[in-house]
Structure formats: structure tokens, C-alpha cells
Image (cartoon, rainbow, N blue to C red):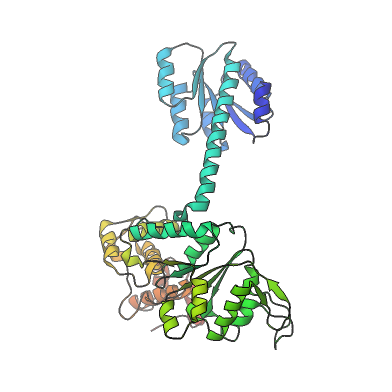
Length: 459
């Protein structure tokens, strides 16, 4: 007994259910097992009481075969139906080989005859079960650790040949600090890939900082990237730390790098070469240790040839090139992603399980998805709302029309997509706000507020 106490003293509380209708024998088992301070004992006299308390997540259940309201076999079946992983030990007053064999076939961990040795046998069985669970937990932890480091499929969905090649590249990128340049059409998931590289690298506990070059006004971008000192220009009331400094020891992701002004390209080149920066209006040199990942939907080499992008910066940032395939070239990944987005939408909106009909799948597979993964997500979210609650059918799927009434192929925010969807249905239902709100399962006030803010107009 002392050996087991030493081995498991520092484990979490191990919860044991004793289901025994004989109070005297139940007390003996409880007293014996409670000698280990890591054991938390619960006693019940009926199978019904045991089943009612399974939510307490017992680590083991000891069951007397003959109970007032059931027998050990029936209770075992119900426990396994609730959670097949719960170990169950059956204790019987009668030695019956056929019964023991049947119980073990149905998933019992052990079968003991009720005598003077039972409590010691039960103690040993508990020790074996805890040791086995500890090994399983250790294996699961190792798998999780390896999965977090190498399994990019947790963040990026796809099993097409083109995506398997991408996963291989990402694994290589995670092993070193090499710069990475990601190319691909708008909506292919370039930032998701950048995050996957960062969070599977040695820098995963350090910052990941993303900057969209196209979204920052030209006059502010230098301060945004490099920071500034107090009083360096009108409005600089305090010192500002730039994105490069924010990402120190971590990863800086520069999206739409091709939109960067030539004058700033030279400054970024210097920072990358010298591994230090000087804030705008300052003199102090700030040392940097930053892994750089860049992305663009343009061909950077073509931009170099046109004189729009510095050749020396191009070779500095190119590093490991990753070219993401458009969704239309990923085959059945379309359906895999559609199911993933549908499940996520249903979960967040408490819609239950919704399927995709064969006709709807066929319709999805025939579409070219100019907006790529981002467009697919918007289409699936809307289809889930429009469906009958059980399946998405072909008629529930709306693609971008030539005039862009519903889903534009251009890059938009989710707020803009939402506005497009509401506009479409306002037009379809003759500006009947109540009907549209009911159809889309949103509040009327949401639509009225968007109209008030000029985000929507009634035709």
C-alpha cells in the first residue's frame, strides 16, 4: 500500500465510486481505499444513484454484481454507454465463470469474488488502472506537443496534393528562422499560414505582429513600423513603439508588401541588414531579433522588373517561397472546408448539426470561387441561415452575381459582406425589414441601425 501511495501521492484526486448495497461491506471498502489521500470516495447503494452522478467523472467504479434495482451487467452497459473510458470493476458474491467472461467481454476492467482478499485485490487493480491512465495521458501529451509543433492541419484545412506540398514547406519553415515569402490570390489564407509558421516555431511564445501595408496611410507608415520619439512631429505627444519593436524575439508579418513605397523599402532593407532600428526623431539604436514573413498577391519579381520593388530587398525577404494555390485548384478541399466552416457556424450559433446535400456539394464543386477561402466561408455562413435547419440544399447556396448583388469577388470585410447580404434580401422582399430580419435570424434594430449609419439604403 505504501508503494502505491508514494507513486501516486502527487497526482490529482482520483475519484472512486463504490456501488454497494451492504452498508457494512461498503464502509470497509471506503475505509480501505481512503487510506490513500489522493483518493476521493463516493458511496452509493443503487445503480440509479451511481448513474445520476456520472457527471462527477469518476476515475473508477466498483460495482456489486447484485444490487436492489439492477445487476452488474446491466449497470456496466449503462456506464459504458455514458462513457466507455470509465474503468468498472465488478465484485460478486458468487463465483460464476460464465458471468465473469461475459462481464469482461462487455468491458469490465476486472471481476472479483467477494471475500477477505477483495479489498487488497481492488487496491492493486486501482493501482494498475491509475498507472495505465498515467501512461495514456503521457502519450497524449507527447502527441499534443508534437502536433502543436508539426501538425499544420490543425490550423489549415486541406488534404489535396497541392496542400500536402504546402504542409511540407511549412514544416521546413518552422525548423529555422529563415524569412518566408507567401504569395497567392486574395482570400487564400496568407495570414493563417503566417500564423501557423510562427506558432509551430521556436518563437511561438513570443509576439506575432501582423501589419497590412495597404491599409496604412503613406505618411504614417514609417512611424507605424519603426516607432517615433515624443515631439518628433506634430501630434507626437508620447513615444510610440513601432511594429518591428513589438515583434522583437517573435515574428513580424508584413502583408501586401508590394504596396510599400520605394523610399520605405530602403529603410526596411537597412533594418533587416543591420538588425537594429532608430525611431523617427530619435538617435538611440534599438537592437532587433525579428523573424520576417511577407505576403503579396502580386508577382514580386515582376514588380522588380517594373522598377516598383527594390531588387536587393526582394532577395533579402524572399527566403523560403510559399505559393498558395487558389481554392478552385484544390479539388475536394472545397467540400472539406465547407463542412468545417458549416460546423463552426452551427456551433457558434447553436444550430445543431446541419449537413450538405449531394446537389449542394455538386454546386459548390462547379463554382470557381474567385474570392477563394474567404468567399467560401461567407457563402456557407449564409447557406446555413437560409437552409431548413437539417441540410444545406442547392437552392440555399448563393454565388456572386455579375453585378455583385450578393457576394463580391473582391476582398471585403465580414461587415461589408453582411451589408451585401442584407441588401440582397431587402431587395428580394420589397424592403420588408421585419421579414428580412426573421429570414436572416437577426434583430430588426440591427438593420435599422445600419440604415441610420448609411451602411444600407432602402431602394
